[in-house]
Image (tube, rainbow, N blue to C red; front, side):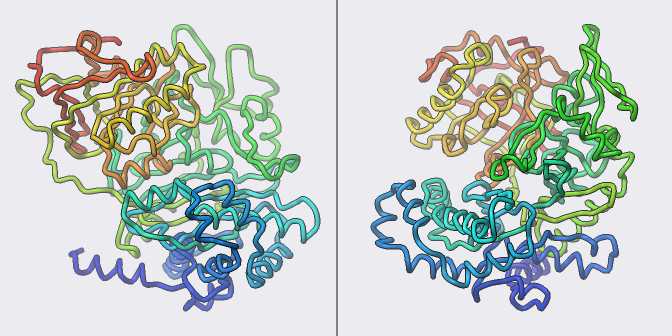
Amino acid sequence: MNKTELARIQERYFSWNPLDDEDFAPLIYGKETIGGKGRSLLFALRQLRDSGDEQLARTKVPKSIYLGIDLFHQFLENVPSLDKLIAAGDPERLESVFLSTPLPRITADAVRQFLLREHDPVVVRSSSRLEDSLKHSFAGKYLSTFLGNNAGNLEMRSLAVEAEIKKIYSRVYFPKAISYRQKHALGDDDMGIILIRMAGRWRGRYYYPTVAGVGYSQNFRRWSTRIKQEDGVLRLVFGMGTMSTKRGYARTVSLTNPYLRPDGQNSDKIAFNAQERFQVIDENAPNDLTTLDIKKEWKQLLEYHPDFAAYAQIYHYSSEGGFFAPLTKDLNCVSEGAKICLTFENFPRRYAQFFERMKKTLLLLEETMGVPADIEYAYEPLEDSLGLIQSRPFWNSESNAEGIPDLTGKRILLQADRMVTPGALEGVTKLIYIDHKIYHSCPEDYYKIARGIGALNAKFANEPYILVSPGRVGSSNPQLGVPVQYNELTGCKCIVELGIPRFGFMPELSYGTHFFSDLSVDNVLYMPVFEGELNNIIDAEWFHNSEWEYGPHPAIRIYRGDFSAYMDGTENRGVIVDNRNAAFPNMGLVM
């Protein structure tokens, strides 16, 4: 497809208006745009319905309504002293005033009419005018809220939803969104709203979908040369898809080969990376996400999921190497030294049609948008029922770097052999290194270390630097990696995650997380390096013997010099080099 044709397709996608669609217009309240997230979702549904493919046409979007940005402006007209309130820069005060301000009558009536017919849990989602543009998704910058929608009468349920709409409106003026817009010179924003039934169903006291996650039509970070970029990639979890948008445990699957795991075929590694917790709505705590432990819940799950063996296996510990055993229908207990974990090992074999369907879905959306597609979905395997939760363009920056140059005279400090971001970064004067031994030994300081990185980032005043850190940078679970926030890494231009298995630190291909969305938009290079693995190098001697200065915490080291990063996506190779230190043979010494 030539550039002219591609531009024409993109123009058609961005100009499409759901108000002109007789199926969707009755779902929309207001006369202006419903925002990028809502418009993109309905566009995807229209393309699937009109695809001529019976399987794709069966894809659903849960029951929903959409509030235009003109209703947002009507609300703002009633907020007292709005300009002074915004200028004060006090988020808590601003939210409080917003909560005490009434919504327009049309908005309140729309909420009540929707909830009159809907008694399952609902999600109130942001859908701003700037969200889901070609490059800036605003992932995690605004707010989405889950509500059980089962407490009290219609009036009480409606007021609960109204309060969440007001909170989302207030987030337009919160520091996180303001700094993001300023950083990318995007100007002001306006907020639309999606009110949507949560995907899933009640299973006893818990409400959740069986499988959920994210999908991409292009796989830009491949973990093997046997994987094709254009065939796409999925990230899937058992239960609510919220687990797939955090840097926790999820199954990443190439649509080229669903059996080719990023973590390899070693049983111990698979068990370590397997999902052990899942999220639900609990009828006893309906307005909070509840996280459950699969090791405690598996017996009752067998009742609701007769196909549970497609998702879970029993892992048996062994000093000589663990192994997996299948679940059986008559299983009553799990022996000591074993655990249930969600590996999805048998899922591709039992539900092969799901992967073919997702491949066709993602291809169609990419063709009709004119850009790679990024979706969120929920799936009920026993009924082959696919629900689309979100659809948007997937931004990935193009690199002009052509392979890795001649490294003669340079010392390779780190080398990766998978999941690298293609590109080059030269002449960086600072490298921040997090000592994994100190970090691991100071659990009480996890967040202090994270804030220390943020303090250095501010001190460097956005000067570019390379960050080398154990496990998953930005993880919501500090045991998996330093829980630094993305807004504390504004000067970071390259992230290297170190896999140190003996300390429990393992990088992960976190497609679908807000963290990686920001990396893509800001052209931050990324590569994982695994200690002890073939073609991976960690030059421990250099890190031990080179001069460094301590950061705000003893776990943080600052190396100054002349560093470069080169990453080749075709060869799946990435290196960090010291430009001033002559190279010599090294074997990836143990840190």
